[in-house]
Length: 187
Image 1 (cartoon, rainbow, N blue to C red):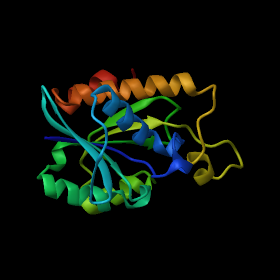
Image 2 (spheres, rainbow, N blue to C red; image 1 turned 90 degrees about the vertical axis):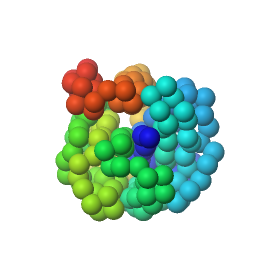
Image 3 (cartoon, rainbow, N blue to C red; image 1 turned 120 degrees about the vertical axis):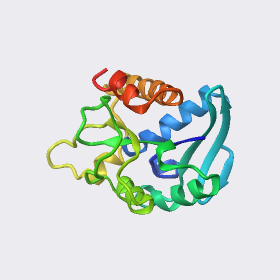
């Protein structure tokens, strides 16, 4: 069983903001796979889907970004999912908007959602898809920037990044993540 986790914040106020790109990708996958996220457990909204590659759970933690691990760890325990079988999707300020970077491990790099996951999982070694949102313009606070929506100019690049992320998730269901990294990093 695989667990695909999109990080974000719950509520209308945060919909389609830079910080919620993980939620947006989970929504696109759920729609593509014809499975609504209509189940709740451990303060997370999720869907289970049976695919040719096996059972997959799509998850949006509703704990707010900084407490994501409080949802993910108990859900993993409940469904008996190993850390090797998760993929976490989230925004990254250090990547140009729309760029993807897939990694198998690493520090939180200042991302509070990843800090929470590392704390609750007890490891930095889990597969991740980082989606670039770029740095804020000079004088703008990081928090205000990541909680704002993408510009209309960025919309096509963001849509392409969402589609590539979905493709990467689907590839990760049947391939080694290292092979998926080689295929999608720099693409």
